[in-house]
Image (cartoon, rainbow, N blue to C red; front, side, top):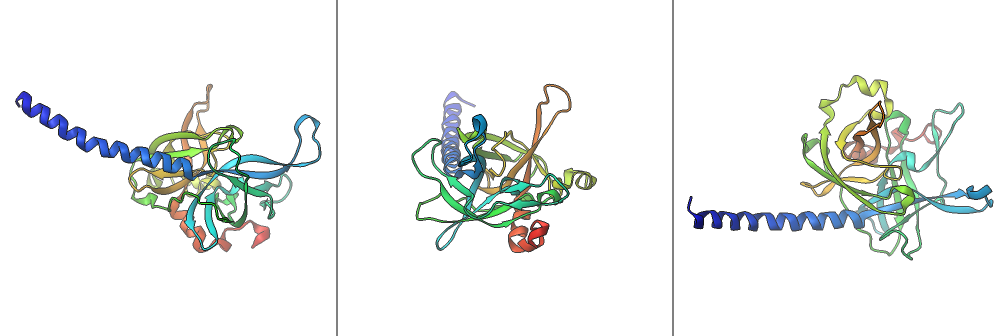
Length: 265
């Protein structure tokens, strides 16, 4: 190939790559805007506690549907429940008025927006998903639900969450590391909250739970972050993130009463 031909090929590749990079950047910022800090009202226990109720950042949520009065949001079930430590095999969903979301940059002046639980799954039985509703005139960024069954090992993913007490919103990217058929079905019998497990090489931290995991190809939510697998030896390195997949989210939305905590059925 001549020097002129090489230069022409390089220009063509640059023209092809530039829109893709621009598209990726737009998607990254869209996911950032869609990532909402999820707060729960709790009793103040800092420095001996004051007995007052304070808003504590806990997890992450994402709007996936625009409704007539606001939005439907998705997060992880364990983010919106108070876990029983005694004899009960279920958790108590947070009462109305105890949950709210924050949007935009951390620490901005916008007041948290109250949200209510529409349906919450029994995460001890694998349904680590909750659907929230919010009535607001604020404009939230929406990312629709996609289909993780169309993804293959190595397909690109990204997520933005609010770890470390919600003081930052952090961007991570990765890829599908194990689809459902690559995981031994017996694993879900030994680890019940992994019934619908799909593994992603994507990090997370406390506060990342409930964050939308977005497919770069589909530009849609293909799961929500629920936990992570760490190595069994120091330094306990992160091996993979665990996500509750979009196909199971859709099943849950269609038949939520099948998956509520036992005291709510």
